[in-house]
Figure 1: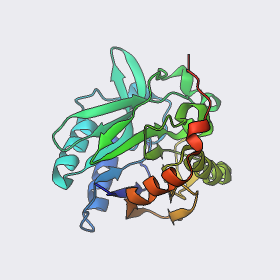
Figure 2 (figure 1 turned 60 degrees about the vertical axis):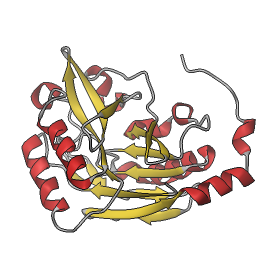
Figure 3 (figure 1 turned 135 degrees about the vertical axis):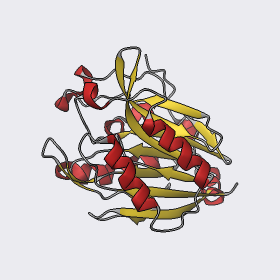
Figure 4 (figure 1 turned 90 degrees about the horizontal axis):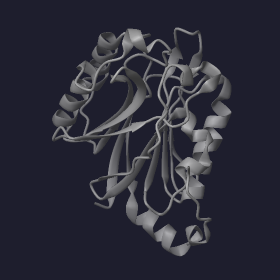
Amino acid sequence: MQKLTVTLVQKDLIWEDVAANLQHLDDLLSRQPISTDVLFLPEMFTTGFSMDPQKTAEPMDGSAVQWMKKQAQVLDAAVCGSLIIEENGQYYNRLIWMRPDGTFDTYDKRHLFTLANEHQHYQQGDKRLVTTWRGWKICPLICYDLRFPVWSRNTVDFDLLVYVANWPKTRITHWKNLIRARAVENQCYGIALNRIGIDGSKLEYSGHSTIVDFNGTALYEAMQVEDVFTLSLDKEKLDHYKERFQFLQDRDSFEIQ
């Protein structure tokens, strides 16, 4: 497939209320017909950025994962977002890549946000995910990972880099600049999906979810409103650019310990 159609859901998140957030998503998605290859949702999309996992965590067969499975089947698309997951007595900020057939991949957030003590409540991930979907190789990451280019460095193994996030308004300039940098340095498309609203910790989120191309050019940028937007990405243009400018052949080789 030369084109990949992506749909981003930028929304307010109801604080620590899984059922209410799932209902809100159902309402948003029912307002317009959606034809897409991937539906992207924010970080911790059923709770907001909560540091109280004992209150909000669900198992991998919980209501949120089941909701993702149902949506993937209905849309005939992959569904991607992160949730608070409990597993073997530990808690994870876990991204789930759900396919229409009910199979899925997971990624546990690598860079936990120490300024909010996320590292005291959640287990750190140690393995990056690159998943293949409809002819595209996609690397989905979570929020604070955006600040750490080594973790996302392309070893020529993905076409699209995605960050699902709860990124505060006070640092939104960083957000805009960093997603462009990650796309340019990795010669790939970049998606940065944020939320809006004010959370239970009184942090304000201003959206500015963005899709950029391999030149760092914004193809779409949402404002501070709830928005469900769809765009098609062109792999032929990406491949042509990478063939013409083979910068990554000069990259440094390294391993992350």
